[in-house]
Length: 72
Image (tube, rainbow, N blue to C red; front, side, top):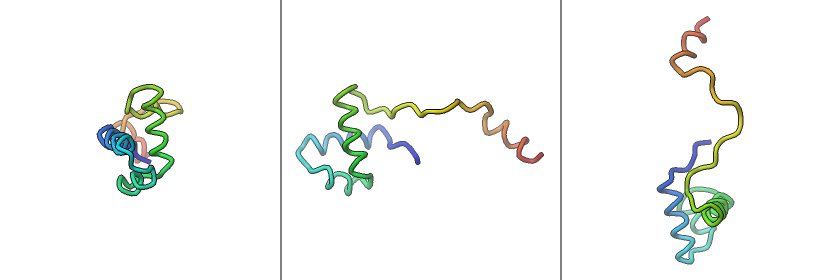
């Protein structure tokens, strides 16, 4: 799943702060209602719209390095 852009997260938060219900904001932004709640909670706790870091190991190979390996 792709991360939601920072600008869209800011717009979602602004709509909730204007008093729109989370369900209405979720439908308008085409995201889930739980994502709207998570964005608002994260901004309230950390004052940032940046997505959380993803778990797991970082990639060892770049896409350019992977292409020749796939041909083998």
